[in-house]
Image 1: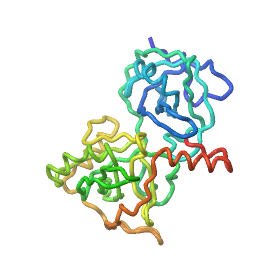
Image 2: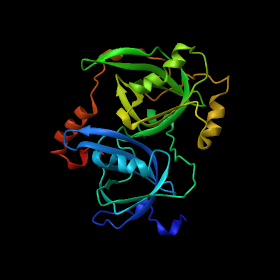
Image 3: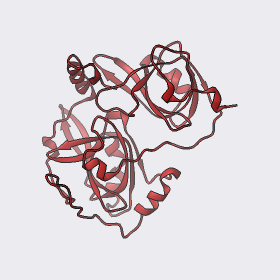
Length: 295
């Protein structure tokens, strides 16, 4: 049986040691390719105390890990190491990331815990810069002003894109732009009527500034998107967002910031980079500062 006293909290992990025994839930996982790390398998893990850590392994270990630790399940991992975390688009604010190597021992856990450990960002903290752009965030809101899902050219390839605004329970709003498969998930709503209520939870979302406005977008495949999902941890917020009287407030912003009105920009002018291109840029920057490595 699972026993809390037999597992080390993620916050206790330290480098130069590998005899750790941890019990974790997989919040998300995805494949990644970068010039300096090659093909890897990335994960966000959480322990029963709510601590979160980014984990990485060679792509060759992916199937072995997924068999024991698929998304939204608990498992036990022994013999892992941690290294300093840094760079852009960090999935957690923990100072270390976990490395799962060939000698790691993985097994299933009998722990029953349906929490998904959401850490919702406040809209005002996003707009005033309290939430740093180097870290990915969880954000929830009601979709307002949903645009059509369009196909645009990016680096010579067709990619789908959708624009909308997220509104919180106080009427504050944020611009959003989702790409690829994330945009496709909104396509049925776009086609079947845009006046319906859509509660949108974006996990591990990226904050990006475009022409003076901070906006929310997906961070390649590191993001998870939930539409009208029944999640107990945010049920109270979901109920408030579903109120038919909810409206977009024109909230005054500090000097130099945009107001709450919709600002139309031509997203075709935006600079779009693949994760490999971002990683390559990080690698160049890391020659000046080693803390700027991706994850």
